[in-house]
Image 1 (tube, helix red, strand yellow):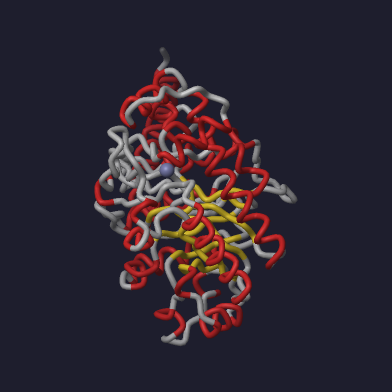
Image 2 (cartoon, protein in one colour):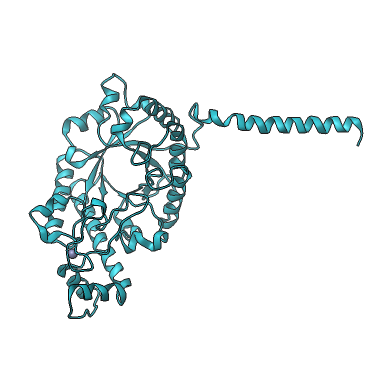
Length: 378
Ligand SMILES: [Zn+2]
């Protein structure tokens, strides 16, 4: 090796080394300012009420790039909706389908029944309702119709549309239900299954062993039937309002197919009735605190599962709801950009943030959200 060559080699080596070191040196600064948005996002929302904290100090939602707000359907008022519309924001209602557990107080026959034939205790305190109770269903449908008829909303999102199970945590608790005589008889009739003339516990055992596949299909069909009826009501009451659903973000095969087997959520079957799917990849809450890329993986998998690409003009859309505030696990300020960028990738065409209350009190985090949302504006 000649001397000159050696110097050149050393110089190249030094440059490569410097570039390598510089690339590391810039990493802490990635979070100091909003990184360039990978793409634009039509809907940039917050979930959990009117952001009055922004408006009351004379700022606008536009200052934060926010153009959609989700409010619980029980909290809808004309004043709130008008105020948001005046800000140029869409107003979407959140609607509790299967978790309006106050109903059980006067209707104990609507409690989900477990494999022993007795009311199944609420797993980790999460109380669901028997999906075939006609009174409960009629009551929820009436409330849904009323929300759409009364309020000038731009859409309504189903929430808690799943079986009696506490899945919104790192380790879900999902008992087998509902083996009430009404469910069991309806299953036998509609799925054309012969069940033994035996005790409730023996019937439950037979259902879960000899007839498991038909049982899962039938049960998913019951929950899909609810969605079909919500769609009909939407069509008749406020056809321009979007019908969305906040749902479990698990893939079809995750946890032995628990999204269908245990939660009774069949997203493909529900798809004809749903305009917008909003998976809930709460990364910190669900055991992925140090892996915000999990948000993007769940959205990608959902797009593949449903054939949604995130391109303009598609009839179905995916708008995830991402976790930016503490729920069991905190979400640090430094992670906000990563979470939003992972949630914003195709096939997502919109997103919203969980949850406004604590976010409104964390000014630094809110300003970071504002920078990022503005960078995602078309
Ligand atoms: Zn039942």
